Image (cartoon, rainbow, N blue to C red; front, side):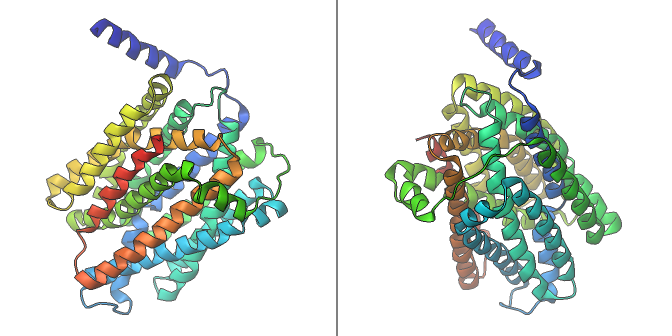
Amino acid sequence: MKLTARLNIKRVLINLVKKDEYTNEEANALYATHAIMGLACTLVGIYIPLYIFELASNFPNLVERGIINSLVYICLFYALSSLTVILSTVIFDVLLARITLKKSMFYSIMLFIAHFFFVLWADTNVYALIPAAILWGLHITLYYIPYHIFFARRADDGDKKYGSETGRRDFYVGVFAAMGPLLGGLIITQMGFTALYLIAMILLLVSTIPILVFVEENKHFRHKFKDIYKGYFINKDYAGTTLSLGGIITSATIFGIFWSVMLYLGLSSFTEIGFLNTLPGIFSTVLMLIVGKIIDLKGKRVIHAFGVVINTAMHVSRLFFGSIGFLYANNIIDVINSSAYSVPFNAKIYEKSLESNVIDFMIYRELVLHLTRLFIILFVIGLLLLTGTWRWVFIVGSLGSALTYLVNF
Protein backbone atom coordinates (compact mmCIF):
# COMPACT_ATOMS: atom_id res chain seq x y z
CA MET A 1 0.00 0.00 0.00
CA LYS A 2 2.79 2.40 0.97
CA LEU A 3 4.76 1.44 -2.14
CA THR A 4 1.73 2.14 -4.34
CA ALA A 5 1.23 5.53 -2.72
CA ARG A 6 4.90 6.42 -3.25
CA LEU A 7 4.69 5.38 -6.90
CA ASN A 8 1.55 7.49 -7.43
CA ILE A 9 3.21 10.55 -5.88
CA LYS A 10 6.30 9.97 -8.02
CA ARG A 11 4.17 9.69 -11.16
CA VAL A 12 2.44 13.00 -10.35
CA LEU A 13 5.75 14.78 -9.79
CA ILE A 14 7.18 13.45 -13.06
CA ASN A 15 4.11 14.67 -14.93
CA LEU A 16 4.51 18.11 -13.40
CA VAL A 17 7.92 18.66 -14.91
CA LYS A 18 7.31 16.84 -18.18
CA LYS A 19 6.71 19.03 -21.21
CA ASP A 20 3.00 19.20 -22.04
CA GLU A 21 2.50 18.23 -25.68
CA TYR A 22 -0.66 20.34 -25.88
CA THR A 23 0.97 23.57 -24.70
CA ASN A 24 0.72 26.30 -27.35
CA GLU A 25 1.36 29.99 -27.76
CA GLU A 26 -2.23 30.96 -27.03
CA ALA A 27 -2.39 29.03 -23.77
CA ASN A 28 0.98 30.44 -22.69
CA ALA A 29 -0.21 33.97 -23.54
CA LEU A 30 -3.28 33.45 -21.37
CA TYR A 31 -1.09 32.25 -18.50
CA ALA A 32 1.31 35.19 -18.92
CA THR A 33 -1.42 37.83 -19.10
CA HIS A 34 -3.15 36.55 -15.98
CA ALA A 35 0.13 36.11 -14.09
CA ILE A 36 1.23 39.71 -14.66
CA MET A 37 -2.31 40.88 -13.96
CA GLY A 38 -2.21 38.82 -10.76
CA LEU A 39 0.95 40.54 -9.59
CA ALA A 40 -0.56 43.98 -10.22
CA CYS A 41 -3.75 43.04 -8.37
CA THR A 42 -2.02 41.44 -5.38
CA LEU A 43 0.20 44.48 -4.96
CA VAL A 44 -2.91 46.50 -4.15
CA GLY A 45 -5.75 43.99 -3.65
CA ILE A 46 -5.57 43.39 0.09
CA TYR A 47 -4.75 47.06 0.67
CA ILE A 48 -7.71 48.66 -1.17
CA PRO A 49 -10.15 47.94 1.71
CA LEU A 50 -7.53 49.15 4.19
CA TYR A 51 -6.92 52.33 2.16
CA ILE A 52 -10.64 53.13 2.26
CA PHE A 53 -10.75 52.08 5.94
CA GLU A 54 -8.11 54.70 6.76
CA LEU A 55 -9.66 57.40 4.57
CA ALA A 56 -13.12 56.84 6.04
CA SER A 57 -12.11 58.57 9.27
CA ASN A 58 -12.33 61.82 7.26
CA PHE A 59 -15.65 60.93 5.59
CA PRO A 60 -19.11 61.99 6.84
CA ASN A 61 -20.27 59.76 9.70
CA LEU A 62 -23.03 57.32 8.77
CA VAL A 63 -22.99 55.82 12.27
CA GLU A 64 -21.39 56.88 15.54
CA ARG A 65 -18.95 54.00 15.90
CA GLY A 66 -15.84 54.66 13.79
CA ILE A 67 -15.03 51.07 12.79
CA ILE A 68 -18.59 50.37 11.64
CA ASN A 69 -18.61 53.65 9.71
CA SER A 70 -15.42 52.66 7.87
CA LEU A 71 -16.71 49.15 7.14
CA VAL A 72 -19.95 50.54 5.69
CA TYR A 73 -17.98 52.79 3.31
CA ILE A 74 -15.89 49.82 2.14
CA CYS A 75 -19.05 47.78 1.60
CA LEU A 76 -20.71 50.59 -0.37
CA PHE A 77 -17.66 50.77 -2.63
CA TYR A 78 -17.89 47.04 -3.38
CA ALA A 79 -21.68 47.21 -3.80
CA LEU A 80 -21.46 49.96 -6.41
CA SER A 81 -18.83 48.03 -8.36
CA SER A 82 -21.03 44.93 -8.38
CA LEU A 83 -24.07 46.93 -9.50
CA THR A 84 -21.95 48.24 -12.39
CA VAL A 85 -20.89 44.69 -13.29
CA ILE A 86 -24.52 43.55 -13.35
CA LEU A 87 -25.69 46.38 -15.59
CA SER A 88 -22.73 46.17 -17.97
CA THR A 89 -22.89 42.37 -18.18
CA VAL A 90 -26.51 42.48 -19.30
CA ILE A 91 -25.42 44.47 -22.38
CA PHE A 92 -22.12 42.64 -22.86
CA ASP A 93 -23.47 40.76 -25.87
CA VAL A 94 -24.09 44.12 -27.59
CA LEU A 95 -20.51 45.20 -26.86
CA LEU A 96 -19.15 41.87 -28.08
CA ALA A 97 -20.80 42.35 -31.46
CA ARG A 98 -18.98 45.67 -31.82
CA ILE A 99 -15.56 44.95 -30.31
CA THR A 100 -13.47 41.78 -30.08
CA LEU A 101 -12.68 39.96 -26.86
CA LYS A 102 -9.05 41.06 -27.10
CA LYS A 103 -10.03 44.71 -27.47
CA SER A 104 -12.45 44.29 -24.59
CA MET A 105 -9.62 43.10 -22.36
CA PHE A 106 -7.34 45.93 -23.49
CA TYR A 107 -10.01 48.57 -22.82
CA SER A 108 -10.66 46.99 -19.43
CA ILE A 109 -7.04 47.55 -18.43
CA MET A 110 -7.32 51.23 -19.39
CA LEU A 111 -10.44 51.50 -17.24
CA PHE A 112 -8.66 49.77 -14.36
CA ILE A 113 -5.80 52.26 -14.57
CA ALA A 114 -8.31 55.14 -14.54
CA HIS A 115 -9.89 53.49 -11.50
CA PHE A 116 -6.61 53.85 -9.61
CA PHE A 117 -6.41 57.57 -10.42
CA PHE A 118 -9.83 58.10 -8.82
CA VAL A 119 -8.89 55.93 -5.82
CA LEU A 120 -5.91 58.22 -5.23
CA TRP A 121 -8.08 61.31 -5.67
CA ALA A 122 -10.34 60.01 -2.89
CA ASP A 123 -7.60 61.04 -0.46
CA THR A 124 -8.87 64.61 -0.89
CA ASN A 125 -12.36 64.02 -2.30
CA VAL A 126 -14.55 61.24 -0.92
CA TYR A 127 -16.83 61.36 -3.97
CA ALA A 128 -13.98 60.17 -6.19
CA LEU A 129 -14.71 56.68 -4.84
CA ILE A 130 -17.95 56.68 -6.87
CA PRO A 131 -16.31 56.76 -10.35
CA ALA A 132 -13.53 54.53 -8.96
CA ALA A 133 -16.06 51.83 -8.08
CA ILE A 134 -17.89 52.21 -11.41
CA LEU A 135 -14.65 51.91 -13.40
CA TRP A 136 -13.66 48.85 -11.38
CA GLY A 137 -17.00 47.24 -12.20
CA LEU A 138 -16.60 47.97 -15.93
CA HIS A 139 -13.10 46.50 -15.79
CA ILE A 140 -14.42 43.28 -14.24
CA THR A 141 -17.01 42.83 -16.99
CA LEU A 142 -14.73 43.68 -19.90
CA TYR A 143 -11.76 41.69 -18.61
CA TYR A 144 -12.99 38.57 -16.82
CA ILE A 145 -15.74 37.45 -19.18
CA PRO A 146 -13.40 37.48 -22.23
CA TYR A 147 -10.55 35.98 -20.20
CA HIS A 148 -12.60 33.02 -19.00
CA ILE A 149 -14.01 32.50 -22.50
CA PHE A 150 -10.50 32.39 -23.93
CA PHE A 151 -9.29 30.11 -21.17
CA ALA A 152 -12.15 27.63 -21.57
CA ARG A 153 -11.66 27.50 -25.33
CA ARG A 154 -7.89 27.71 -25.74
CA ALA A 155 -6.27 26.26 -22.61
CA ASP A 156 -7.87 22.78 -22.69
CA ASP A 157 -5.33 20.09 -23.58
CA GLY A 158 -7.97 17.94 -25.25
CA ASP A 159 -9.26 15.84 -22.35
CA LYS A 160 -12.02 18.32 -21.37
CA LYS A 161 -10.68 18.27 -17.81
CA TYR A 162 -9.35 21.50 -16.38
CA GLY A 163 -7.53 20.35 -13.25
CA SER A 164 -4.05 20.51 -14.79
CA GLU A 165 -4.81 23.68 -16.73
CA THR A 166 -6.29 25.48 -13.71
CA GLY A 167 -3.47 24.28 -11.47
CA ARG A 168 -0.86 25.40 -14.00
CA ARG A 169 -2.49 28.79 -14.45
CA ASP A 170 -2.81 29.33 -10.70
CA PHE A 171 0.81 28.24 -10.29
CA TYR A 172 2.04 30.86 -12.78
CA VAL A 173 -0.19 33.49 -11.19
CA GLY A 174 0.96 32.39 -7.76
CA VAL A 175 4.67 32.62 -8.61
CA PHE A 176 4.18 36.27 -9.55
CA ALA A 177 1.44 37.10 -7.07
CA ALA A 178 2.99 35.48 -4.00
CA MET A 179 5.41 38.39 -3.73
CA GLY A 180 2.66 40.97 -4.29
CA PRO A 181 1.39 41.44 -0.71
CA LEU A 182 4.90 41.74 0.76
CA LEU A 183 6.12 44.08 -1.99
CA GLY A 184 2.92 46.10 -1.66
CA GLY A 185 3.37 46.43 2.08
CA LEU A 186 7.00 47.51 1.71
CA ILE A 187 6.13 50.04 -0.99
CA ILE A 188 3.34 51.56 1.11
CA THR A 189 5.62 51.75 4.15
CA GLN A 190 8.53 53.31 2.27
CA MET A 191 6.88 55.37 -0.49
CA GLY A 192 3.13 55.50 0.17
CA PHE A 193 -0.03 54.47 -1.65
CA THR A 194 0.63 56.72 -4.67
CA ALA A 195 3.83 54.88 -5.63
CA LEU A 196 2.08 51.54 -5.13
CA TYR A 197 -0.74 52.44 -7.52
CA LEU A 198 1.66 53.82 -10.15
CA ILE A 199 3.65 50.58 -10.17
CA ALA A 200 0.42 48.58 -10.45
CA MET A 201 -0.64 50.70 -13.44
CA ILE A 202 2.61 49.96 -15.28
CA LEU A 203 2.22 46.23 -14.67
CA LEU A 204 -1.36 46.36 -15.94
CA LEU A 205 -0.18 47.91 -19.21
CA VAL A 206 2.46 45.20 -19.62
CA SER A 207 -0.11 42.47 -18.94
CA THR A 208 -2.03 43.30 -22.13
CA ILE A 209 0.89 42.45 -24.44
CA PRO A 210 0.81 38.60 -24.46
CA ILE A 211 -2.87 38.23 -25.20
CA LEU A 212 -2.95 41.02 -27.80
CA VAL A 213 0.02 39.57 -29.68
CA PHE A 214 -0.44 35.80 -29.48
CA VAL A 215 -4.16 35.00 -29.11
CA GLU A 216 -6.22 34.65 -32.30
CA GLU A 217 -9.92 35.43 -32.32
CA ASN A 218 -12.77 34.50 -34.64
CA LYS A 219 -16.00 36.37 -35.27
CA HIS A 220 -18.60 36.16 -32.51
CA PHE A 221 -22.37 36.05 -32.73
CA ARG A 222 -24.90 37.99 -30.67
CA HIS A 223 -26.03 36.40 -27.42
CA LYS A 224 -29.45 37.25 -26.01
CA PHE A 225 -29.86 37.78 -22.29
CA LYS A 226 -33.29 36.12 -22.27
CA ASP A 227 -31.66 32.92 -23.57
CA ILE A 228 -29.10 33.07 -20.75
CA TYR A 229 -31.88 33.63 -18.23
CA LYS A 230 -33.91 30.67 -19.49
CA GLY A 231 -30.93 28.41 -20.07
CA TYR A 232 -29.24 28.90 -16.69
CA PHE A 233 -31.04 31.00 -14.09
CA ILE A 234 -34.34 29.12 -14.14
CA ASN A 235 -32.87 25.82 -15.33
CA LYS A 236 -33.03 23.26 -12.50
CA ASP A 237 -29.94 21.52 -13.90
CA TYR A 238 -27.88 24.57 -12.95
CA ALA A 239 -29.36 25.14 -9.48
CA GLY A 240 -26.31 23.63 -7.75
CA THR A 241 -23.95 25.63 -9.94
CA THR A 242 -25.82 28.87 -9.20
CA LEU A 243 -25.72 28.24 -5.45
CA SER A 244 -22.04 27.30 -5.53
CA LEU A 245 -21.11 30.45 -7.49
CA GLY A 246 -23.10 32.49 -4.99
CA GLY A 247 -21.31 30.70 -2.19
CA ILE A 248 -17.79 31.29 -3.44
CA ILE A 249 -18.34 35.03 -3.98
CA THR A 250 -19.94 35.32 -0.54
CA SER A 251 -16.93 33.67 1.10
CA ALA A 252 -14.47 35.73 -0.96
CA THR A 253 -16.25 39.02 -0.21
CA ILE A 254 -16.34 38.46 3.55
CA PHE A 255 -12.70 37.36 3.47
CA GLY A 256 -11.55 40.22 1.24
CA ILE A 257 -13.17 42.97 3.28
CA PHE A 258 -13.50 41.85 6.87
CA TRP A 259 -10.51 39.53 7.23
CA SER A 260 -8.28 42.23 5.72
CA VAL A 261 -9.57 44.71 8.30
CA MET A 262 -9.20 42.16 11.11
CA LEU A 263 -5.56 41.60 10.14
CA TYR A 264 -4.94 45.33 10.00
CA LEU A 265 -6.51 45.96 13.41
CA GLY A 266 -4.55 43.09 14.92
CA LEU A 267 -1.15 43.63 13.31
CA SER A 268 -1.19 47.40 12.55
CA SER A 269 1.53 46.90 9.93
CA PHE A 270 1.23 46.80 6.15
CA THR A 271 4.59 45.08 5.88
CA GLU A 272 3.62 42.39 8.38
CA ILE A 273 0.33 41.77 6.56
CA GLY A 274 2.22 41.39 3.29
CA PHE A 275 4.77 39.04 4.85
CA LEU A 276 1.98 36.94 6.34
CA ASN A 277 0.43 36.42 2.89
CA THR A 278 3.61 36.00 0.86
CA LEU A 279 5.38 33.07 2.55
CA PRO A 280 2.44 30.63 2.64
CA GLY A 281 1.48 31.87 -0.84
CA ILE A 282 4.78 30.59 -2.24
CA PHE A 283 4.15 27.12 -0.79
CA SER A 284 0.56 27.18 -2.00
CA THR A 285 1.61 27.71 -5.62
CA VAL A 286 3.40 24.36 -5.70
CA LEU A 287 0.37 22.64 -4.18
CA MET A 288 -1.80 24.09 -6.94
CA LEU A 289 0.17 22.21 -9.59
CA ILE A 290 -0.01 18.98 -7.64
CA VAL A 291 -3.72 19.32 -6.86
CA GLY A 292 -4.48 20.11 -10.51
CA LYS A 293 -2.81 16.91 -11.70
CA ILE A 294 -4.37 14.77 -8.97
CA ILE A 295 -7.95 15.89 -9.58
CA ASP A 296 -7.62 15.11 -13.29
CA LEU A 297 -6.46 11.59 -12.39
CA LYS A 298 -8.56 10.84 -9.30
CA GLY A 299 -11.51 13.25 -9.40
CA LYS A 300 -12.36 16.45 -7.56
CA ARG A 301 -14.84 15.63 -4.83
CA VAL A 302 -12.57 14.33 -2.05
CA ILE A 303 -9.95 17.08 -2.36
CA HIS A 304 -12.59 19.75 -2.78
CA ALA A 305 -14.50 18.49 0.26
CA PHE A 306 -11.32 18.76 2.34
CA GLY A 307 -10.72 22.32 1.08
CA VAL A 308 -14.31 23.36 1.79
CA VAL A 309 -14.25 21.97 5.34
CA ILE A 310 -11.00 23.77 6.19
CA ASN A 311 -12.10 27.05 4.56
CA THR A 312 -15.44 26.95 6.38
CA ALA A 313 -13.73 26.18 9.69
CA MET A 314 -11.37 29.15 9.22
CA HIS A 315 -14.36 31.48 8.79
CA VAL A 316 -16.10 30.15 11.91
CA SER A 317 -12.96 30.37 14.08
CA ARG A 318 -12.68 34.11 13.37
CA LEU A 319 -15.79 34.65 15.46
CA PHE A 320 -14.06 33.58 18.65
CA PHE A 321 -10.36 34.41 18.45
CA GLY A 322 -8.31 37.49 17.68
CA SER A 323 -4.83 37.12 19.16
CA ILE A 324 -1.78 37.80 16.99
CA GLY A 325 -0.84 34.11 17.09
CA PHE A 326 -4.33 33.21 15.90
CA LEU A 327 -4.17 35.75 13.06
CA TYR A 328 -0.91 34.24 11.85
CA ALA A 329 -2.08 30.62 12.10
CA ASN A 330 -5.48 31.26 10.54
CA ASN A 331 -4.12 33.20 7.58
CA ILE A 332 -1.33 30.69 6.87
CA ILE A 333 -3.76 27.74 6.92
CA ASP A 334 -6.24 29.64 4.75
CA VAL A 335 -3.68 30.56 2.08
CA ILE A 336 -2.21 27.04 1.90
CA ASN A 337 -5.69 25.50 1.79
CA SER A 338 -6.64 27.66 -1.23
CA SER A 339 -5.23 24.99 -3.58
CA ALA A 340 -7.70 22.38 -2.31
CA TYR A 341 -10.54 24.89 -2.09
CA SER A 342 -10.27 26.85 -5.34
CA VAL A 343 -8.52 24.67 -7.95
CA PRO A 344 -11.18 21.89 -7.99
CA PHE A 345 -13.95 24.49 -7.97
CA ASN A 346 -12.56 26.50 -10.89
CA ALA A 347 -11.74 23.37 -12.88
CA LYS A 348 -15.32 22.15 -12.49
CA ILE A 349 -16.71 25.53 -13.59
CA TYR A 350 -14.63 25.42 -16.79
CA GLU A 351 -15.78 21.87 -17.48
CA LYS A 352 -19.41 22.90 -17.02
CA SER A 353 -18.93 25.76 -19.49
CA LEU A 354 -18.05 23.25 -22.22
CA GLU A 355 -21.37 21.46 -21.70
CA SER A 356 -23.18 24.46 -23.18
CA ASN A 357 -22.35 27.72 -24.94
CA VAL A 358 -19.14 29.01 -23.37
CA ILE A 359 -19.92 32.71 -23.83
CA ASP A 360 -23.45 32.37 -22.45
CA PHE A 361 -22.12 30.39 -19.48
CA MET A 362 -19.44 32.98 -18.63
CA ILE A 363 -21.98 35.82 -18.81
CA TYR A 364 -24.26 33.79 -16.51
CA ARG A 365 -21.31 33.13 -14.18
CA GLU A 366 -20.47 36.84 -13.85
CA LEU A 367 -24.09 37.79 -13.26
CA VAL A 368 -24.53 35.21 -10.49
CA LEU A 369 -21.32 36.29 -8.79
CA HIS A 370 -22.21 39.97 -8.66
CA LEU A 371 -25.93 39.67 -8.06
CA THR A 372 -24.97 37.61 -5.01
CA ARG A 373 -22.23 39.99 -3.92
CA LEU A 374 -24.57 42.98 -4.19
CA PHE A 375 -27.27 41.21 -2.17
CA ILE A 376 -24.83 39.97 0.51
CA ILE A 377 -23.19 43.39 0.90
CA LEU A 378 -26.53 45.19 1.25
CA PHE A 379 -27.62 42.54 3.78
CA VAL A 380 -24.38 42.98 5.73
CA ILE A 381 -24.64 46.79 5.67
CA GLY A 382 -28.15 46.57 7.09
CA LEU A 383 -27.05 44.34 9.95
CA LEU A 384 -23.95 46.43 10.62
CA LEU A 385 -26.15 49.49 11.07
CA LEU A 386 -28.66 47.60 13.21
CA THR A 387 -26.24 45.72 15.47
CA GLY A 388 -23.24 48.03 15.67
CA THR A 389 -20.97 44.94 15.65
CA TRP A 390 -19.21 43.12 12.83
CA ARG A 391 -17.48 39.85 13.83
CA TRP A 392 -20.68 37.90 13.10
CA VAL A 393 -20.12 38.44 9.35
CA PHE A 394 -17.83 35.41 9.34
CA ILE A 395 -20.92 33.23 9.87
CA VAL A 396 -22.10 34.53 6.48
CA GLY A 397 -18.69 33.69 5.01
CA SER A 398 -18.80 30.16 6.39
CA LEU A 399 -22.25 29.50 4.90
CA GLY A 400 -21.04 30.70 1.53
CA SER A 401 -17.96 28.52 1.77
CA ALA A 402 -20.06 25.40 2.49
CA LEU A 403 -22.28 26.07 -0.53
CA THR A 404 -19.34 25.89 -2.95
CA TYR A 405 -19.32 22.10 -2.74
CA LEU A 406 -22.60 22.02 -4.69
CA VAL A 407 -20.59 22.72 -7.85
CA ASN A 408 -19.83 18.98 -7.93
CA PHE A 409 -23.49 18.05 -8.52
